Amino acid sequence: MNRLVRGSLYISVFSGLLLSSSFSMANVADKLKVAIASDVRSQAEVDRDKNRKPAQTLAFFGLEDDMSVVELIPGGGWYTKLLVPILAEKGSYAAAIGTSRIEKNLSTLPGFERMTITAQDAELWREDGARFYSLKIDSLGVENADMVLTFRNYHNFGDQGREAMNKAAFEALKPGGIYGVIDHTARHMEPMTPSNRRRFDPVKAIKEIQDAGFVLVDYSSLHHREDDELEYEVGARSVSGNTDRWTLKFMKPE
Image 1 (cartoon, helix red, strand yellow):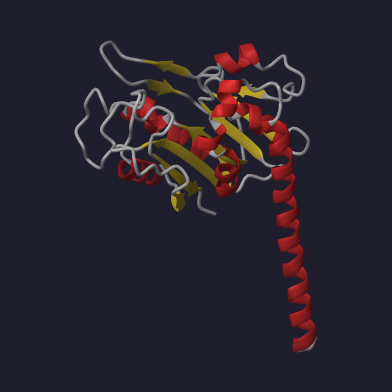
Image 2 (cartoon, helix red, strand yellow):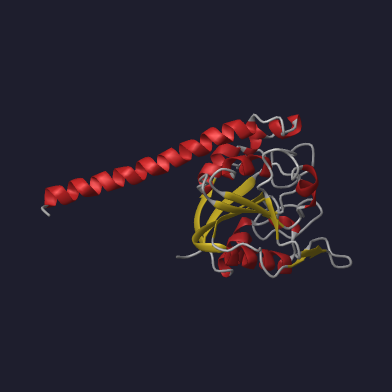
């Protein structure tokens, strides 16, 4: 095969891969628009779209509609209500740890029947006098997942809980799988106070997650807020709904 033919073949294949990826991302964007407009979402949830930027956030993590995705500690299901519709046709969605609210409020709704609750034997508790949670979990109950995501939950755990969560995420992912983590920013190495207890040092998070075996792939300033002085409790009126947050993308090595 001469150089011109080889070059043409390479360009053709490469263009096809780009087209396929772009088409997949377009599908995600279209499905996300539908999910965002769904009447399953409350007005309070809709009001947070501007601040949380779900389209840009999920694009940064590289979400595609045929992925196997696990969400950790989904809370009331703000992201669940967006992820499930995107993944329902071609992919799969599983939620693990702290899933009681979405089980109660979402599992019986039309379109959410493919939502899976996994790792139901996981134990989440606080030791006497402790501010933060411990976690006992053998497995997320998922193998070769494409992506594990958790939003504004990392700060809720003590050292043991964070280590257990990171280990479970690592074991659930396939090689090359993505671990996406977002949380409220604390100043690096600042001593803990009642005001910063729901914030977390991003440098410490990076070290801990790398210690679990992950590689830091990228970070995003999507949720950087210059007017958050990193001084006040995240529920304080001056910063509530507008905290500075770090957005980190890790990968399980190939």
